Image (cartoon, rainbow, N blue to C red):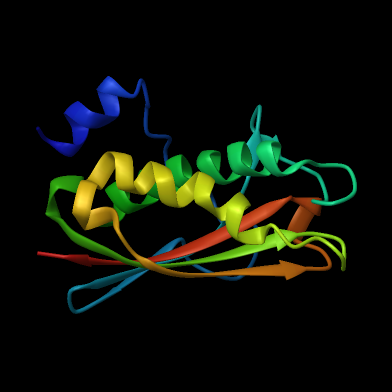
Length: 151
């Protein structure tokens, strides 16, 4: 089953690459590695605002991280032209807008990790880091970047 068949089965439509809102590019390829800039969670086309442990619960954070995964796949598609060229999702770095006492950053990030595993199978298994931060651009609740290897 191709990656696109899997996306269709999951009823996922890939979005276009979002225009950068600061001085960076959405992706850079170096050799067989593709580096995607951080993508913030969006809801209804706007920043998905919230702070985990204050205004946002873990389950909603997971949904936000899943939304980021879909945006990341859209950018990855634009970067490589065909998601079937993905040899491996190498690493995710997840930043979670959270209170100082919040400790479920890893569970929020599972929203992204689980979707990559569902879409890419073994190729979607990746290393990752999940950090709690005091704030993110536009007040977003989650931001995630990605490194992938292509063939």
